[in-house]
Length: 77
Ligand code: SF4
Ligand code: SF4
Image 1 (cartoon, protein in one colour):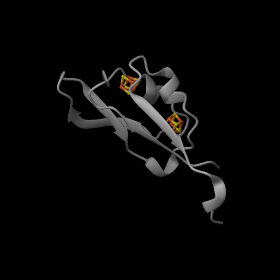
Image 2 (cartoon, helix red, strand yellow):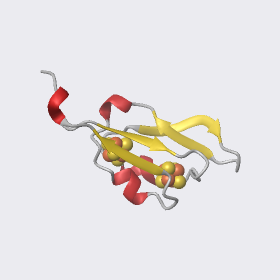
Image 3 (spheres, helix red, strand yellow):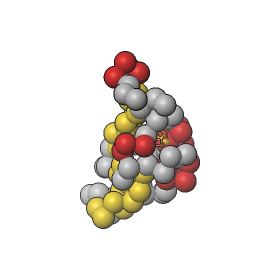
Image 4 (cartoon, helix red, strand yellow):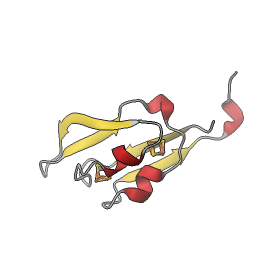
């Protein structure tokens, strides 16, 4: 399984929740935090589960998410 990580620009996030709904691995969740515009921002609650599929970034209307994928060379098991 590929491994990914996302970086969420908290000041761009409007807390719409689309990324949470689309993530197949249930990685993202609302944080307890609000940005300067007063929106409840999302964060990686379960980062170890991210597969780098980028569904979240593709669906975000505010382009608040960047996705990074790791190469498979460090795979264990
Ligand atoms: S890249 Fe895929 S698995 Fe990772 S947080 Fe986004 S939707 Fe979820
Ligand atoms: S889809 Fe974008 S704006 Fe909406 S909650 Fe996710 S990161 Fe925030």
